Image (tube, rainbow, N blue to C red):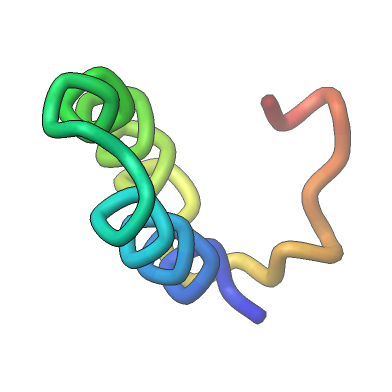
Length: 50
């Protein structure tokens, strides 16, 4: 699973289970993270990358 796919799944979860304010608070950090590692495999990420 790529970072892009994981973020999409998490966004779907947020939209179905949380209020808009919570969704908005995740928007910037997730979009920033996605812009840095869009096609990277989730399993290849280490703590140094975050």
